[in-house]
Image (cartoon, rainbow, N blue to C red; front, side):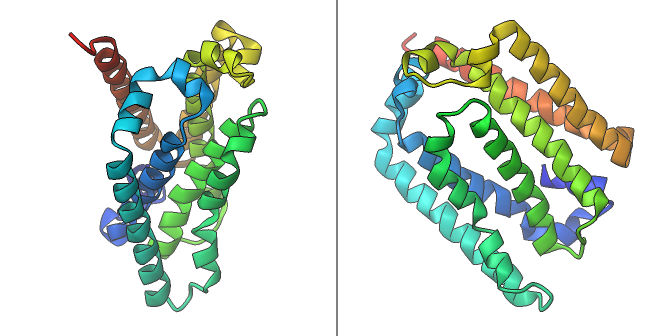
Length: 234
């Protein structure tokens, strides 16, 4: 995502450097920590994943803490090396952790979790470019934020389609549960298309094609995950 964003903004990847590592470290921490908090709906929707999480609790805890330490250390390094970056950037860089803190409450309201995840993913991507390069806040950076927000928001609702049964049994209402499967599938397709179109309008066909490839890769890994889950015990 960072590499595609840099290409969209005509920033050489060499300029981004270790800024490419910031989002993976932070998202690893956020997602592992969220998965370790096994929610009631996880027992129904993701029994295989829930078992893995419980079996490897200690290893997951250690690796997520290492990822968080790595993220904080890199962020601190960028702020110290750049006189133009104030200490407020350290605070901005920890905003996603605030979202993680309240995420359980957001799940209780339709679309709130999707909006939070979409905004967080998009924010971390553009923030990583802000601290690791000389790019400035402007309409182009804002357009990149919008493109990733749309794609990430739709991705969350796409996953929610698979979790409708478990969410219903746990009294969790998502947009997918409210609309139903077919309308949500259509909505996801439209919103993801709008995200790709945003990149096309801002940076042209090549960047839009890269964003589309990103979506294809996500679909591939989701298919592999489903295949592995379906063949457990064989």
